[in-house]
Image (cartoon, rainbow, N blue to C red; front, side):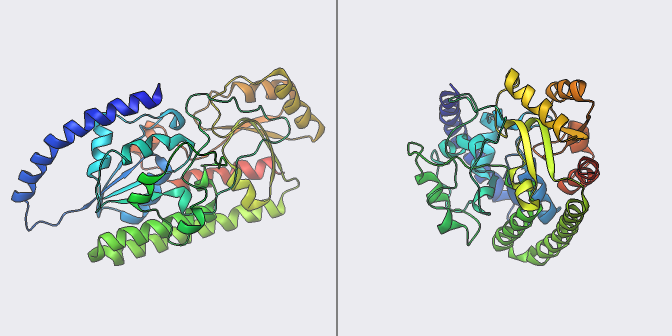
Amino acid sequence: MKKRTIALLIVFTMVMTCFAACGDKNKESGDKGNSKKLSIIATGFPEYDLARAVVGDKANLKMLLKPGAESHSFEPSPEDVINIQKSDIFIYGGGESDTWVKDILKSYKNEDQKILSLMKMVDPVEEETVDGMEAEEEGHEGHHHDSDNHDDHDKDKNDGHDDHDSDKAETEDEEEPEYDEHVWTSPANAIKIVNEIEKSVSKMDPKNKDYYKTNADKYIASLKDLDGEFSKIVKEGKRNTLVFADRFPLRYFVEQYKLKYFAAFPGCSAQTEPSASTLAFLINKVKSEKIPVIFKIELSNGNIAKAVSDATGAKVLTFNTCHNVTVDQFENGTTYIDLMKKNLDVLKEALN
């Protein structure tokens, strides 16, 4: 059903784009001599915020995902598809939640456009199911067993981005490993992503390259400070196990800091109700290891965490995965670093 919706959107958008192109030509003929800002479209908050840190006010940057919305079930509108087609740079995650992107990229040709996938900027890891975790249901909406990172990853990881033509040539029929798409949750990966975004925007807009480089260096310095604070908390902690009574999209985070974890669901799971055995496992784990804090993630109803808390007395805290922000946070300019700094306090409490 989702693929059919995307297909209809593409047909509709191709027609609308023809009309829009005529308008653009007329507009451009009257704008000659003016400095044109780069147009950048980002699918979600991580892509948007890390790009924002680099481009500042020198580019027109738009986030497709609405603040407060569920990122895994996002579907583009006809206007979104048109904006993607007309953009100078399109940035997306590249994982299971973005399978709709391939159909859109195959629907048009824009050789001047730069396509950036976060998963091709880092070394991806395969998703895993740990003890007690609810097994993923096959074929549920919004989760597919393909991504932009598979056999061509080694080819692309050196330059940190993918070419438009190679994206359009990918097929969805091959059996591929399922990679965790939440690459931004590791500050080390965020540094790589910022570096690659800076290289791309500087190449496309060389007159502002010094501005972009200065912004990127400043943000990377903040990310390195953040990394150091997380490392210090983990090193000084009394324990190294985290319990998430929720989805767990933080595989890259725990890998970076060598933390153990238990959770109700994988990161992209559409399930909201755990089985009795999963709930019992989490409760027993919290009791047996005397875990003082259990986590839920942002924008979650927290029902599972409350149930575990009621049974164990453990405190419920929110760990920000940076998937998205609320409307108020977006309007107030909340950043990736702002959200991760909040995680410093809750992580310290959980490990002590």
